[in-house]
Length: 367
Ligand SMILES: *Cc1c(COP(=O)(O)O)cnc(C)c1O
Image (tube, rainbow, N blue to C red):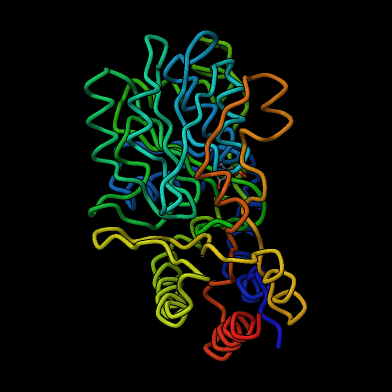
């Protein structure tokens, strides 16, 4: 039996409604920004209960734009985590600031006890990640940020459709950045991203900077960039936003089923604690596994496309060590040797989940 990780062939099997809208767009030749991009931004602002949304060409640029909007640059420090996708630290480096990476906790989220210890006069931003589509304790991060008068930029790239005590990830800090990469919970047929904020000044600046600093066709106010979302992708995003809640619901059902069935494998397999008032997106369903590399091999051999996110934390990457001092983050380092990501997507059938559970159980019983 095959248990695929990639759900895209199933997701876009039925695409008539997207094609119909694409045809309208092609007839209009409105190929930059325009009404579909604006419509998506309005819908996403409403969905997240944010005042403002600006779409971007991807999640990395959404993070860069967020930091730039707060005038973060050379000489500034940004506190973030090492166990994330490259783009989190990459965005900090791209704006010329210094990443100050802290360790994570047992739920793979930023260790908030470590954050306060790392604050200096140069700290301008805390950049927590909603890693895997789960969330850190945002209320504690907000308290620290208020106490020291620093900004919060949330990397909510994997958090679209989640909830933190009733709020949407990315809406609790000053700015939230999201990605619509094909493997995120709200995805397009290529790259896309967005930013949300409740601050009008920040919104106006981002809007302008994203589009060459233009005030109108003949005048620029500041030097900007072109980080625009493609209208073709805005159409896909509007279409996918309609099914987002049901995607999250099915992923949660699958994750809860896996949690329940794999619980008995403790301590060989450790499932992270789930928080009652949080809704995770399960962009990644990750557990800590003994003999991870052997288990991974066995799963692949049996047709189950498990993955590792990631075998090397950011502070151990060559790119990091070229520029910054060596640091030790024992939890991230030890987790990177044990984490395994199992398929959990919305197109999996119960027999595929059961098959995966059986293979994992057999592995630990015979090893
Ligand atoms: C995907 C992702 C990004 C980058 O988004 P892109 O759209 O691929 O540029 C940044 N941070 C995290 C946590 C991500 O998962």
